[in-house]
Every structure is written in structure tokens, then in C-alpha cells.
Amino acid sequence: MNETSLPIAANSKRVWSFVIDDMVINVFLMIIFSSPLTALMSGVTEINEASILLFNQFILDNIAIVLAIKVLYHTLLIWQSGMTLGKYVMKIKAVDLLNGSRLSFTQAFWRASVRLISEMFFYIGFVFAFFSSLHQTLHDKLSNCVVIDV
Image (cartoon, rainbow, N blue to C red; front, side, top):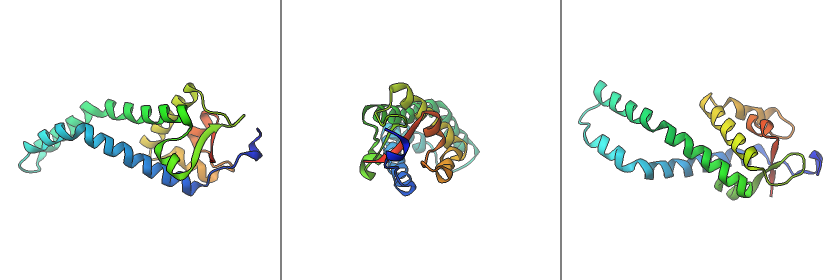
């Protein structure tokens, strides 16, 4: 399958897919951390330096879990079907650029990892999609994939 035969997904679909996926992950994180956050907040009677330090420490203690969940969500779903929940709703999927097939686990993991790094640095890697003829983000380019309409 060559590049010109792939039905490249519009950036608008990719943006909505991103929003849906972020909402799904955030709801999942709220469920996971609801008890610890409730316990943390129940001890806070006013917002002061001590309460802010407690909250910041909670974030530092749990950042690895949050990052791991994000990478796992994107890696496993893209590897299995090429679609996250957001991509499924928007009827788009990530495929290998060279042959249009499902991404390997390594490609999916690399894509999810670079995606996370792009998020942490002001979403700069996502901007690539607006200047690429194939609408590829940095994580798409580095994992040799493209997002297409299904």
C-alpha cells in the first residue's frame, strides 16, 4: 500500500479523538485516586502553604502511575486494534505507513511514549500534524505510522 492510497484522517477528527481519550483517561484517574484525594482533602480546612505542599507531594508520589497509565492505554489499544476509544468514536485508526497494517507492539509503545513527551512539552509534537501533508504528529513520524479514516 503506498502513501497516496491511504485515506488520511482530518486534523479535526484527530483533535476530537485526543479530547475524548483525555477525558477517558482523566475519569479513570479520578476513579483510581478518588479515595486518596478525598482523604487528602478532608484534612485541609483552608488553602495555605501546608495544604499546597501536601497536594504537590501527592502529585509527586503518583506521577509515575499517571504516566504509566497513559502510556499503557495508548500502547495496548493502538497495538491491538489501531484505535483508542477516541479514535473508535471518530472512526479513525493508526496504521503502519509502509503497508497500512496494524502497528507492532514496539511501534505502538514508541508512539505512546513520544506522545507523552510531546504532551509534557507544551504539545509541540502535535503541532507537526498541521504542517504535514499526511497530518503526522511527531509521534506518528517517529513510529512510522499514519492515522487514517476507517
